[in-house]
Length: 235
Image: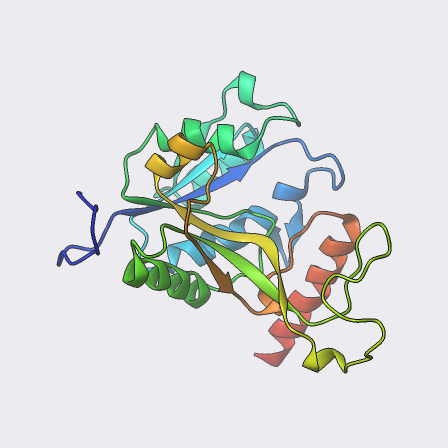
């Protein structure tokens, strides 16, 4: 699909979800397939993505036998790419993995998320897609952020977003935004040209903090377990 200008075609652009999942995890052993709320962690994000109508396909890049077997048994419509050996090391940049994956299946846009974002909601993913598509090419890519209104300091003890001599209430501070790694939307052309998911004009897409929890440490896993239990109890 040619998309040099604003998207006006009746046919929606082809959007493919990419979900990288390593078998090995440094800080939380086996986290991608560790049980969370009675099912493996990775199954939460797969179920979410399957409920997003704008997605044409879901592609999982993994070197995990457990993940591959589980996907084939429980999610046969999900495409699996077995990660090549040269891309499995801990220090391989994510952009190199994405360059490999986007070469395997053609699309107009790619949406990347992680299995470690189990609280992300399908409607939030849909809103992100619609936001970029309706504003393309004024914005050429998108990344999700969490809005922060708190007093921040750099490593040298310098105030970043406030004047220490004027003690404003935190709700009156100018907001800053944290890249939360939940959603990235980009085109392969951008990735090739910049070796980066973000283009020249990326859109920041705020999402609720309750959805933005990324499991990076053991404490994160425990907190997400508690939040999942609370959500189930409220249903």
